[in-house]
Image 1 (tube, rainbow, N blue to C red):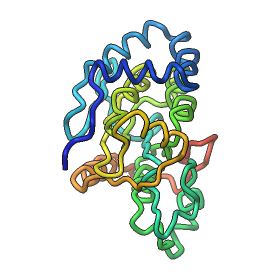
Image 2 (image 1 turned 90 degrees about the horizontal axis):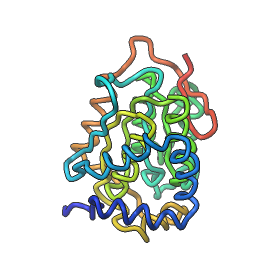
Image 3 (image 1 turned 180 degrees about the horizontal axis):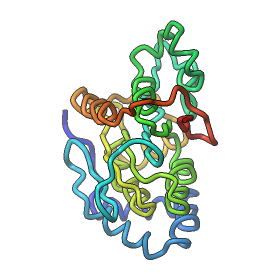
Image 4 (image 1 turned 30 degrees about the horizontal axis):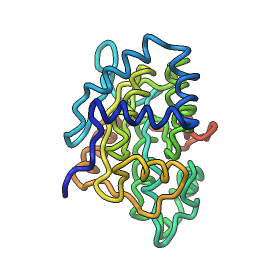
Length: 248
């Protein structure tokens, strides 16, 4: 399959110019740029220089490499991974996952048909075993308020593993870099947004296609989470705002 349209340095600048006319743009400027101006400027430059053409994109952070797992770790996946037929019991354009939010009872019951092959269920369970928080990503505004701002202001998140559209890699990396979050990003293989108009519609919840992660990338993400498994993993999540945090 041909690679998605990738915003390079000019592409990132164009994305930012488009976004400045919309709520996400001025909110990013107010919540991140004004509070952390030097860090944000460095983040934009660093994000623009990243090579996002590979199978995955590594987003560095100051200091030594951080092992993934435990407090400060976050796994984020797009809502567009949710099944369409049969449909997700939690609905689509939201941060909800009825299966993960009802653990451990759900794990002991029969898995609903829509959930059996769902990547969100699989990666949520693996995130829990790694002691990591889990986040079903929807709009850019919510990601800003739920991930980038808490990371930049209070260091809530320090390491992340994310699956999202390749088109969003550099803008997403800019938010992570401004928050000091070390991360690896995997792209969707099919059903992904490849230009700004399509991205904008999906950002508003208009996403008729289901995305898929390429099998090799899905296995690599699966392995990374398994490698981070805790000796005594948490049994359930607690939802705080839109993010599922593991209970000790």
